[in-house]
Amino acid sequence: MKYRLLAVMLAFIVASCSSDGDKDYRQENEAEIKAYIADNNLNAERSTSGLYYVIEEQGTGIEINGYSNVTVSYKGHFTNGVEFDNTGDDFTSFNLQEVLPGFVEGLTYINEGGSIILLVPAHLGYGSNDANGIPGGSVLVFEVTVYSPEMIAEKNDEDIAAYIEAEGLDATKTESGLYYVVNQEGKGAQPTADSDVRVAYTGYFLDGTKFDESGASGLEFNLSQVIEGWKEGITYFKEGGKGKIIVPAHLAYGTYNYDRIPGGSVLVFDIELIEVKE
Image (tube, rainbow, N blue to C red; front, side, top):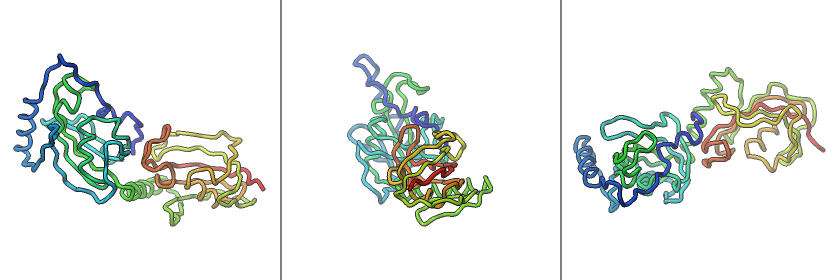
């Protein structure tokens, strides 16, 4: 994940509805979409709204509705092939209420784990007004895969493995999917999953971008009140211990955007267990 936060969604943010005086592109959009379908030999279906779509993989996960939180990878381009956005090998998470009507409708035809091609006419996209570099009246083509939790976990694990290799870390993987590195084991008390502790930490993403830190004096908290990756990970250290915890999304904030943390993110923490309170 490239951790562009909401910047990756610029191609999706819902534009204002067209006013009565704006040009209606439906007829010419329809002709453009039909030509694109013919040129690319697509077996597309048309909905009553005017959206065209091709289901490439239905998916076996949870059914998607117009209010779902989703994690997707996608490529967005015009019918001439020119791209306007692309997540590449990454993914991004958002609620469907935040995106274009055509995108919302299209994803409701598949389940988590599915993939679909959407051919979005202007009245279901940005209308007749220019927006975010997209000319008014444009037909938008999206090639979308919706990640299931299992797919996110698999991608997280691949990314963590690549990070560990690149950083030359001697990391241990637990049954839960957590990774940890003990640089200094410590000699004091060892906490349990509900201990009160003081921990100094720096939190960052796999690309090195920092999202949080405690300062040298650390913060006090009970391990039962933090993310699962911390609840487990801190227990591998003794008081005075130092190291690293690498937390996949299912042991952190899952698929939901949380503050400055995009859904699906792997979180890396450099930690020092300063104190275990009796």
